[in-house]
Image (cartoon, rainbow, N blue to C red; front, side):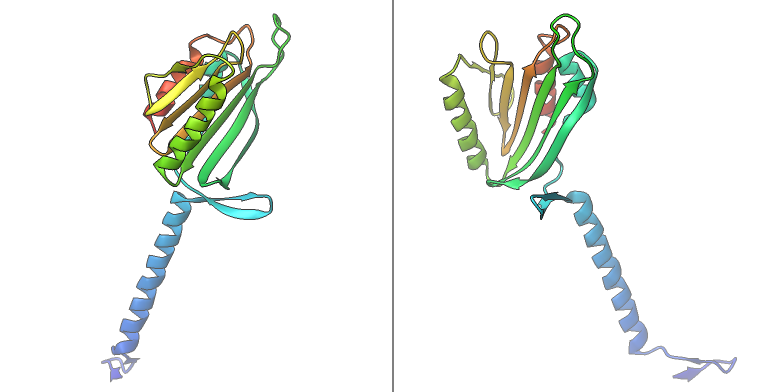
Length: 194
């Protein structure tokens, strides 16, 4: 300890250095913790907490309305980790029944990011084989691989894979407002942003 000119004792030894190191460690840990929460989110599913990989590619209400051609509301959404993939899924429903068809428009969306690209490709192939038995598939010109399946027969559906990420979009109930090109335009834009 040293006494200053005013007669106050000050300590300039290891304690100051130790406090400074501890302070810097706390700042560093706080920074890592904060970045982790920004990069990863937490979600609860079936009573368990999962880290949700980020960035997740959400489907905005504006994008959903471009697909459906009418005002929509989000019906539900969930996210988590299952079968080797982080996922986010949601559905949008029309605000009101269509005056022409009497239907409530329904749109379903799912984003998946697999741990490995080979897993994503395997899941994609499984869907393509299964859906190809029901009606013709049209290959997409975007993404690493993708296809469109739709009327006449099943409702409009797009599955596209880019790397280890996949998007699924399905118009389960179209209405008189649903444009023919909205689904394809949104899927193409979403895929380019992956």
